[in-house]
Amino acid sequence: MNYDHIVIRYAELALKGKNRSTFERRLQENIKVALKPYPAAKIERTFGRMFIKLNGENHEEIAEKLSKIFGIHSFSLAVKVDNELEKIQDGALRAISEVLSGTMTFKVSAKRANKGFPINSQTLNYEVGSYILRNTHDLTVNVHNPDIEVKVEVRETSTYISCAVYKGSGGLPVGTGGKVVLMLSGGIDSPVAGYLAMKRGVKIEAIHFHSPPYTNERAKQKVMDLTKVLTEYGGKIRLHVVPFTKTQMTIHQNIPSNYTMTIMRRMMLRISERIAQEQKAFAITTGESLGQVASQTLHSMHTINEVTNMPMIRPLVTMDKLEVIELAQKIGTYDLSILPYEDCCTIFLPPETKTKPTRDKANLFEEKLDVEALVQEAVSNVEIIDIFPAKKTDNEFGELL
Image (cartoon, rainbow, N blue to C red; front, side, top):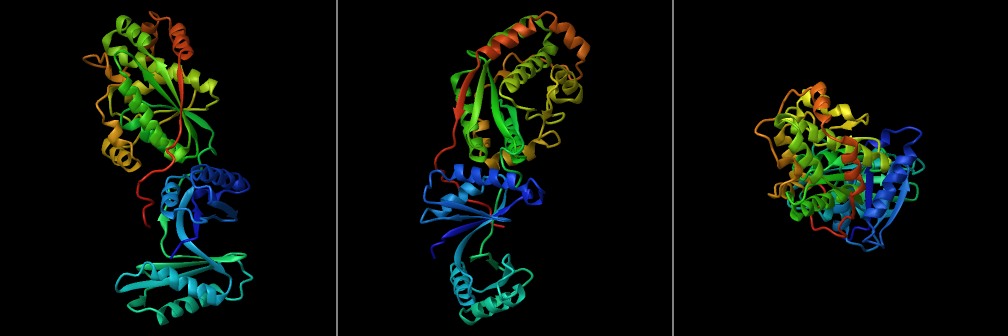
């Protein structure tokens, strides 16, 4: 069978009130952007549903794209028929025949969004189910745990029939929650933090601190590649590459070794805040996890946070490393993150780092630095790179529910 439509079901945006249409329009626009490589595909939106008319485009490639768009709860490859019982029965039989394999069980789940359709849902379940039984072999009904669920959605002008539901990414459409900057190091954690931030509807701009010649071009390319993976979930991402060599050398030469990491992170936050303000972002996102390293203890976070009034979003704060690795593998960033190219946080590492730094001592040590001059020089020389999604990908599409 040639599937001619995809039915899209919303995630939590379906719970929104008067501003629900704003979320739906943003989701529709995000889908439209993701499907630019498939110009024949057309998107239609009705209350509670979105439909993609494939017009001959590759349904598997489009389904793979949809599986990565936040705001989609689930979707189904579907056939569209007229609102007539005979057409619905025939469409359901054709749809289930495509997925039959040996002895299986099924049930029909009919839903009437069009209350003017003369057959109620229960009767439609019976009429379609009995028609399928009469025209197939090795099929039995199981209403509790079937192998196949035939979904029949009767809309205003047409009926959509599907036999498989694929899982979407959930969350809220990117662009509905404002903009944040993501401190992207190139390790395992920060790309996952960016992914989870986008899942809550925010648009991200990435900031990477680059310290040549101590960090080389391969490290920078690694971060660009990680950003490109993230664009598959949130569209174009602007990457800000911050020259950080002078700041790091100044800290290394003037600050006691057990406080260098604390002061370095404070400088990073100051620079990130300045970039965020210029880009009209409202928060800073990091990949910090509580207690994972010395700079991520509560004492360290308290001292480092002193230098910014911006909200800090830490999506991984309660996750352990194995949970983060599992998610990194799922979203496709893990293999890039473990490439052995150093970032600026791994150079000039002191023999020990203070796990309980205080604000008083951090401020005392920073008196040796011209903080504002270092921040201004770094911000003035930022390299800006716009990263776009790949046109097509070869990944498997969404997880079957």
